[in-house]
Image (cartoon, rainbow, N blue to C red):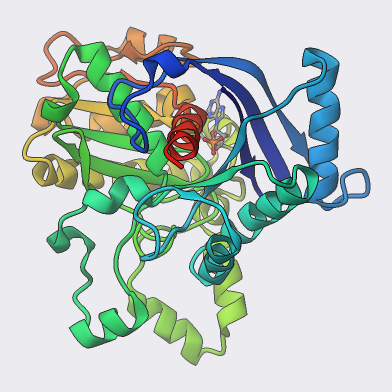
Length: 392
Ligand code: AMP
């Protein structure tokens, strides 16, 4: 089965073509615990959508097909799998896309304004380009459907929560699912017995507590704004601060901009590129140093809390752009966990700057292993797409 995986953002479209091995598939309709074997045939991205060269997502798909055919010759996909960030209360499993599903993804744009609109654009463009080809929405929120009520409920009036579907959802689900599986495999622990804290730290960032291979708490909530300090989002804030800004004349649009694009590392250090922040901090830039301190301290607090949430972790795992590549950010975070007995091996940590495979970076005396696992959300999206299409 040949699956095209699309991750469609506002200014870029990432894609992969994967050949799935149907013989290794599990029960139809379910993503098997061990994973379906797959081979990556092509991997790339189209940047600068909305600029003169790449006007819209339709043109981005044309450019993608050109790139693909230059490398692979003519390709015929069996299905397209789309990453969709917010599935809200409507979807607790991945969906074959029809008009109703697409309409709901559009409606959920209010909760994920940076993500759902370009996700929907990618779906529409693929529908126009390949009419009749099955398309599947693979939601970031689905992996967190196992959150217990005490973790997903906000302490707001119950009636209000029901009326508006207010609850914590969590995101980065495909990444957490993949990394959980790989970390358990590396440690030789059966998935259903695996307890861990996973830190997905990229431009978007969230931490998840895993118990028995399932998500039991996660730091993003109703929207992808809650939790850790991110590239351009602040993470946790006192809601009273927003009320105060509102009284000072900040309207919803300005707050949206502030919270989604101007805060986080960018707000603190003037840049959301971890490489330049670490470099500047090393050269004595106090704002960069403070940004690193705020972000790593926040993550360390969550790791402590999630150690409780999962009943004692078997492992701490770093993934995504910063988690996989920034030894300095990992060092600053794990240094704060000394009282839990979690310690890095300085050389192993420094060596893991671009790991191609999962690796261990903890010291021999650390009470639990600390791992770096390169994430592969596309593998989960391709598996889920194959499973949904074969169970039709
Ligand atoms: P992601 O959203 O997962 O692609 O992660 C993006 C973040 O990873 C940005 O802050 C990048 O600066 C950071 N990043 C990527 N490569 C490196 C690297 N080699 N060292 C430090 N940070 C990196």
